[in-house]
Length: 143
Image: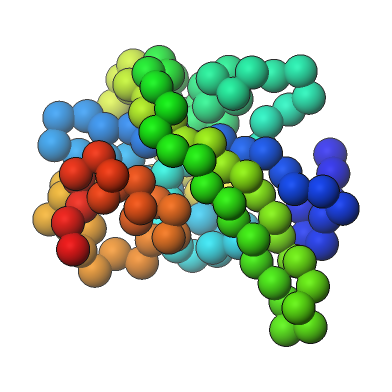
């Protein structure tokens, strides 16, 4: 697997926005970038893997939930520089709407906490900027 920190090339990742009834599933990130922040589950695409299959695999690995991938929601550049202006992280992330095939979830080494949140609980939640943008895009979060 390529080096995530100070990479030679951008890395392509996926995320799954999972809504059920009036709740959305978020994970508390264990790794940089965004360690300690809440985000949608996701990760890097493996060589030879489709984006949709990567979403299914990553969601199941991180939260133990099987999903159907519905549609592309958005794509984001995540570029983070260090204090010497070097690229520390560079990801291109394609986010999908995913439909849960269950409700029971569990944490993992990549997600210390996993939780279903109602919209009213999100206002002051410390989330990644990409997750916040997605939740606004699907009208689950308002300013």
